[in-house]
Length: 406
Picture 1 (cartoon, rainbow, N blue to C red):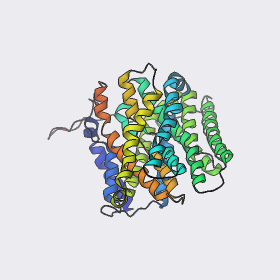
Picture 2 (picture 1 turned 90 degrees about the vertical axis):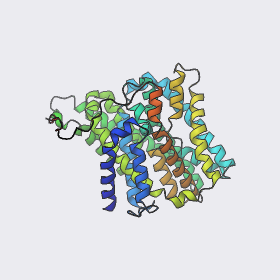
Picture 3 (picture 1 turned 30 degrees about the vertical axis):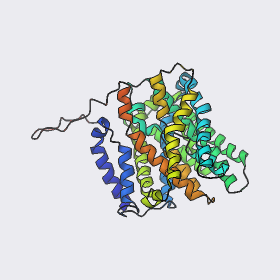
Picture 4 (picture 1 turned 60 degrees about the vertical axis):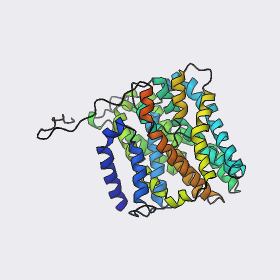
């Protein structure tokens, strides 16, 4: 219960300071990460959570699922077709280059075997635009840039997963079953698309009409059904989440639009909870045990590998240079890397602790760098922070009455 209380207090503080965060380099995500580190066993010890606690996996899993479901609803088939030339390059060329670019220094600098080195590259190859919220969450940012970052981050989580699973099985010297992995991924796509598509088609019948105030709960129910079905059938829930969201947006854009605001709030809650727990796992002892050479790998991955890989993949495109540089910089490591890093930690491979420490350091560094540069970069793109944020009412005055829902 101490963790629940801590989450409520940090959430209250973060919401209260969110207006300030939108105008400055202060980041809500960064506040949760720091709060988790201060409240965890490496700080004041308010909560003694550890990596093998069930709540860690549960939160990371749920957060990634909700993020992919909401991201999928921004990636309908028309949107994917319009932006596929850019996102296809980022996924088909930029992502493999990122894996290779991280694996090479991991092998030669840290002395890791090639399987473990490529495992680190696969874990750190997915991106998460939540730490670039000043860009992807703004309608006045160029649409092609927002779609590039959203589609790339929505798809690369699932694309990295089979590579992570196969490399983990190889590192454990266990039998690798590529067909089993492929079957889980394919089943995830089918489960997500079929359930969401069937419901969307049923909603076209006159019999099925939702009361306006309950309409956001329709997509929520789809997400719950898909999530439970995946865990019962061993289908991949992350690909299922994205497929379900994309299918719903394609077949029923009205339902997707009604769900958008509510879905964003739910995904924010799960992400913040996962960040708080993840911050608690990044103890000073864990980070202090990293040598300067091990710290060099996160710096190389964030400052060199990701920007170079995406710039190479976007060569000879019509994307303006300023937007190309922005897309190259914003490749933050987020919840997919958290989940895959925890899989490695719990796998029992010989280098599991070392891999997790490097992954944790990279994610922490990425959160700090990317969540504090989204506002300055937005200004370089001539995008100002929101100017409609509420200001404190002068003493003695009352707040204007807000209209009630319904």
